[in-house]
Structures are given as C-alpha cells and as structure tokens.
Image 1: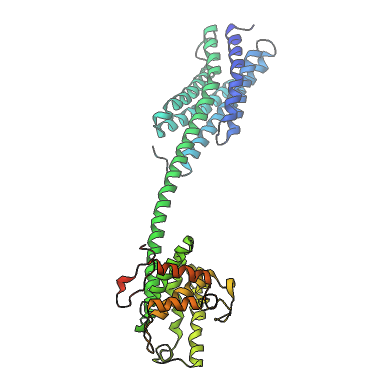
Image 2: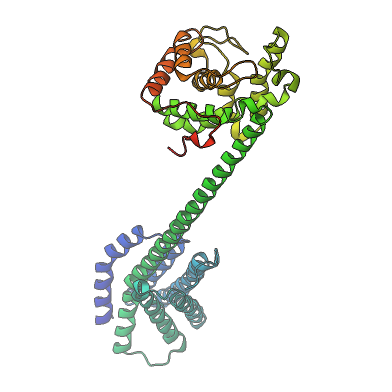
Length: 95
Length: 320
C-alpha cells in the first residue's frame, strides 16, 4: 500500500526534476558523468521505493538498495576527484 | 545481501562526506561557506539514511519513512547546487589567481626587457665608440649619425623605426674595423684602390651585424647606406626606392655629418654649405623627399650642427 510520505515525496521529486536537469546542464565539474550516474542512481532508487508498493516488492526493494550503493560509490569517487582536481593537481591552493 | 549493499552505500556516502568536510576546511572563504555547508549536509543526509538502512536501528514506521523519503528528495537539489556552485567558485578563484600571476610576471618581464634594452643600447654605443676611437677625426661620428637619423625618422613619421634607425646609425661604420689603419687613417686623398678597400666597410658592417640575431633588423640600412638614389652608389648599385628606407635616411645623416666634420685632408664645411650640397645632390645621391625633410629640420632649428668638441651637444632620440 502506498504511504502518504511516498506520494508527497513523488510530488517533490517531479517538481524538482526540471530544476535538477537545468542545474546539471549549467555546472562544470571534473568527472561530470559521475554526478549524472549518481543522480540517476538516486532517482532510480527513489522510483523503486515508490513502485515497490505496487508490484514486485522484493525485486524493487533489492534494486533500491543496489542503486543507493551505486550512488554512494559514484559520489565517493566524485568527491575524491573534485578534491584532487581542486587541490592535488597544483598544490598551490592552500587556504 | 541488502545489508551489504547498504553498507557499501554508507561507506560511499561517508567517503563523500569526508571529502566534503575536507573541501570545506581547505576553502575557508565566506563566499563558499554556505555552499560547503550544503554539500556536507547533503552527504550527511545520505550517509545517515544509508546507515539507517544498514543497521535497521529502528522498527519501520510511517514517521521514519516520511523523514527518510524527504531526506532523499532534499538530497538532489542540495548536492547539485552545492557541488556546482563550489566548483564554479573555486575555478573562478583559480582563474583570478592565474590572471594575477600572469600580470605580475608580465610586469617583471617588461622590466627585464627594458633593462636588457638599456644594456643593448649601452653595448652598441660602446661598440660604435670603439670604431670611432680608431680615428680621432671621426670620433663621435656614429653618435651624430644616430642622432640625425632618429630626428629624420621622427620627422618622416617612422615612429616604429626610430630605435632601428638610431642603432643602425651607431653601427653603420662598424665594418671599418676590418680596414687597415694605413688606409683608414691616411692623411691624404685615397687612391682608387684604397677607396675600393674603404667601400668594403658597408658589406663588412652588414656581415658583422647580421651575425647577431637581435640586430638583423639593422642589416638593410647598414649595408646600403652608401647606395645613391640614381644607382651610382655601392655595394649593390640599387636605384631609387629599391634602396631600403633606413639606408636612405642614414645616407643623408651620414653625409651631412661627414661634410661638417674635419678630415685629415680638409676642414669641415659650415652647416649652410653642407645644406647646399645636400640640395645639389637631391635626386642624384639622395632621396629628394628625405633631403627636403632634413633641410626643413635644419631651417627650423630642430636639427643643429653637432659640435665635435662638445659631446654634450648631442641630443639622442631617447632623450627627446
């Protein structure tokens, strides 16, 4: 059964989708595809969370956690790449 | 299986959280502080959610799910805004620092170039003085020619050639180094053979100067400063505008100073007589336009006869 929180969250996600796309296109990042993959995995995980209330609950629940793991790895690598690119490549950016 | 995936997610978001904190600590600028906070918040939220999944600390209830779902949705705009904004700011800062460094280096380079140019002029003056010193009758001749040539260049509107004209004037006779003293310093008129030997100095000067990479621009003027407008000059017998402009300017400057200076076999002419000689050779030995300009400079007092006994009479183009 669909919970109230999932309906509200779905509405929020739909409202934020254009902002997410618009923002993503405007930013400049090293390894930008990792951000896209991470965001895609997050959205996928969230969609799976909502859909598991309607069908294939076991498979979609597994998919949700799998996509969260993928998103975590993507953001971890992206964070490290950003740090290295910003501070590690020249070593001249001491605060 | 699910718990392993949740642990991986927790680990990943945890690393991202640590990276965000490191980013924030390294960039303690007020302009990026709120962006860093958003980044840390986003990663913190997802780390907490993943940890909640992995540890299953609390029994599932509507309240926890509500919090978790909102947290997940909030993550998206937070992470986009924070990461994009932070990186853009850091890149802008880096570009600003690079621009400042380039400006500083450019300034230092300009200072060094000015200093080197000053040294080069000093060296050229010393070299020309060494040549002039072989013959006390022509001492300061090169400095005078440089001075007249620069004045002529300015009057002709050759502002971008003034330095070249001045340096070519200084070095136009450097080839006389290769001429024997017996000929160069002969206290009488030269024989035809001796005159032919003297004529070599233009080519020798050009060869000496041409061997110095930074001076190659002076070669045409120096090599051809004894060419005549009607083609009767040397070394190549060029005619009219085939003679490089620098050489035509030097020819007038050189001739005027040569006529007005003393020689072992004659005394120097007065400025008026030298002026008349220039006009007489207008269109024959000299470019008529350049003679006209030089005569006008003489008449207007812009160019005055240089006094060989008084080195202070020189006003180089650098001082003007």
